[in-house]
Length: 284
Image (cartoon, rainbow, N blue to C red; front, side, top):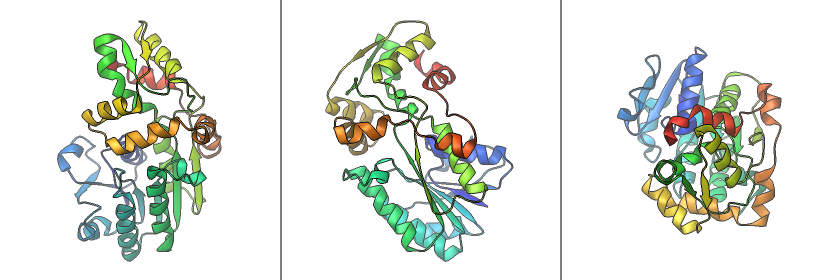
C-alpha cells in the first residue's frame, strides 16, 4: 500500500492517478474528502490532517511507502516531522518527499528553509528517503487564465528571467518511479523542464496554442502575490518564490536544464508547448 499526502494538489493528484493506472494499491490522504470524490474508483481515501498526529495512525496502517507532500507555508516542517514520526512508528519502508530546488543549494529563503527542516525531520527518524527538488511548475500559468480570457494579457513580474519550468506530470512520474522501483533510496533529485523560458516566451507559446496574440505586462511582486492569494494560493509562498526570481543567486539554478528525467524515466520531460496544448481549455 502507498499513501499519498497532498492528494488534491497538482502533483499529488497525478501521483495518485499514475500509481492507480500502474495497478498499485493507493490510499489518498486529504483533509477534505469532497475534493477527492472524482479521484478514481480503485483509490482508497482517508481523511486526516498532517497537523494532527492522531489522524495519521489509521492513514498509515498497512502502508509500506509514502509520498509526502504538504501545502507549504510555515507549518511545513511540523507537517513533515509529524508524518515522519508516524511513518516510522507504523513501519513504513520508504518516504518520498516533495521538496523544492532551493533545498539543493541551501538557500536561506523561507520556502527553502521550511523544506530543509522537513527533509531533516525525515532523515532524523531513520527512514529510507528520496527527496524530489523541482523548480517552478508550468501549471503556475493557471494564474494567468482570467486575464488571458478577458484581456489577452498576462500580468506577471520578472518577465526577463529564464526558468526551466517543469510539468507537474513529470514530477509525479519521478515520484512514482521512486515509490515503485529500487535504487532511489538516499537520493535527492533536482528537477527541471527541458528548456529555460522567460515569461514572455511562455506567453508567446500560450498565444500560439490559442491562435491569438497575447501580451505580457510587468507588475510588482506584491501585485502578483495578491492575485495569487485571490486564486487560493498561499501569499507568503508565492511572494517568496517570486522574490527569489529577482536575485542573481537564484536565477542560475532555476534556469538550468537538468538530466534527471532522462536518467530516471528514460525520456525527455514535457515541453511548455505540450503543457499549454493539453490545458488550453483553461485559457479560452
